[in-house]
Amino acid sequence: MSKKLITLTMLALFLLTLAISGCGQQPSQSAKVLKVGAETTFPPFEFQDDKTKDYVGFDVDLMKAIGKQLGYEVEIVSMGFDGLIPALESGQIDVIASGMSITPERQQKVTFSDPYYKSGLSIVVKKADTAINSFKDLEGKRLATQIGTTSAEEAKKIPNATVREFNSPSEAFLELQAGGADAVINDLPVNQYYLAQGGNKEAKLIGDILNSEEYGLAISKKNNELTQKINTALAELKKNGEYGKIYEKWFGKKPE
Ligand code: GLN
Image (cartoon, rainbow, N blue to C red; front, side, top):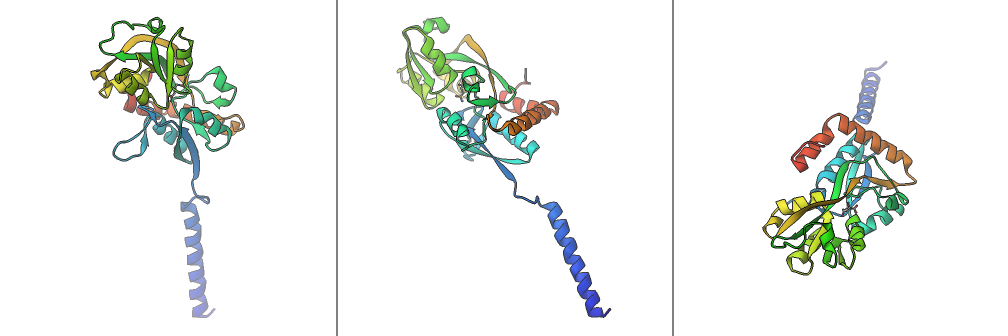
């Protein structure tokens, strides 16, 4: 073998080694993206960080952790709460992570993951209000809620109440502040967060809690494989302590 041929052969081998090791380092496909739909004005579950403009919150961290387990990159697609299930049905998004309560009506259209958060509905009124102390006292009152939610459904059941449905809980709180509503009905943890973030200067929480609701991630009925993967990842995160860490980060206490 001539020297030149040896050099060329070695060079070829060297290049081949590089190519093979390169393949090992990079995934053969670029990372898969999981499109996650959310109504992003629902702190502390999903909201936009004032400074970075990134979507943050308990659901966002949980979805990112699930994505990591399953080898997906997570992309948050922000939309109105009442648009989430239609978007899932049309394939515009893969999962809903939006503090969505598991209800029999919704279960007819989507598949829910195992529950990941225990919630309930509660009432916020003006601080000076002494007339409203329970859900019973809401009869005939002007109520502000968020469109498409379990709160809106419950509000509509209250006799003689006037119900206004807003696109976001923050608009409902503004209506209360402005005197256009007597009470806001909304998910308890979101009410608590609103009050803790300064809302308690003007408003207060009523102790009465209605319904025990559980949040689930929603997946298309056609995508059983994804539902199973998500449930497996969720169970693993609960087991390995990651779920507990995320829970403590956003709620300041250990999961119940
Ligand atoms: N948990 C409530 C529901 O499912 C509200 C959710 C929300 O507004 N993001 O209707």
